[in-house]
Length: 149
Image 1: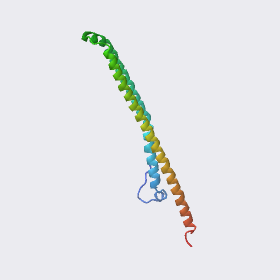
Image 2: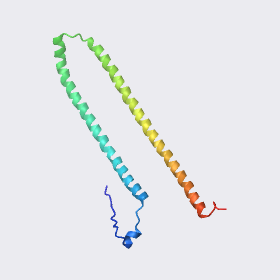
Image 3: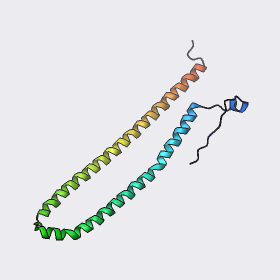
Image 4: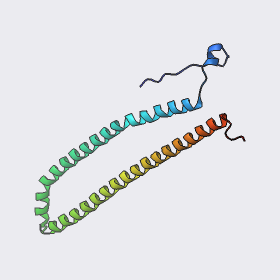
């Protein structure tokens, strides 16, 4: 995204006097550009996190494969009863269920929070539009001297 800048001198030439800088336009333009830049970065972040989690899963699967090979020898040498592993499996299923519930709860919270923020911004936009409509009517009425008897 290329940003165009305007050079305005303070020397007071005729062309400078014709081109007045509006604080409203400056704020709108600069804020819009910043927000768009942030918006354009979101896919990069999402792709980065997707790549990281893919790599985590791959690394974990590699470690698990190596673990499986040595597991049989380890448990056979220690003489551990494999029925104990059923309890360990039940424990891990419980931990997994808790983790999934927490992930789903957080996702729901994040969605509700975004919906709330969007709704708030919609309400603010409607309020500002209404206020500006009333203001412009008042200014128009003032110009027509409706307030003066």
